[in-house]
Image (cartoon, rainbow, N blue to C red; front, side, top):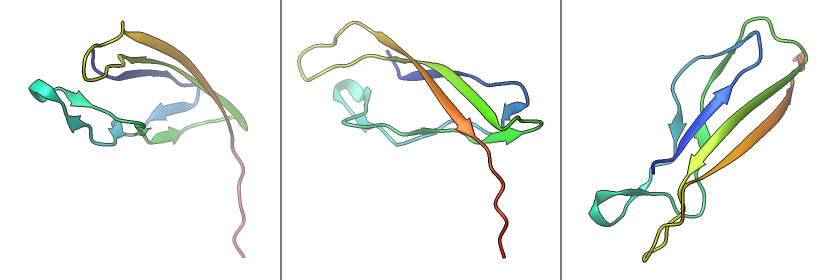
Length: 89
């Protein structure tokens, strides 16, 4: 099962581009494999945000080793974001 992430954005925030991730290795049979860590990024556009925002999502994955794959799993994630303006002098 390929790695997938579905994000839910708060009101006043929208996606401003596609997902960008680290490149997977090629496993046996050409199957993409991430080892140790994977970084997923996607730019956001703030339209009318509040100072406190919560982004949530569902990560779907399947962990495998050289001999077998475990059943697909999912992980619910939540991140609180705080916005602040900085003045450069």
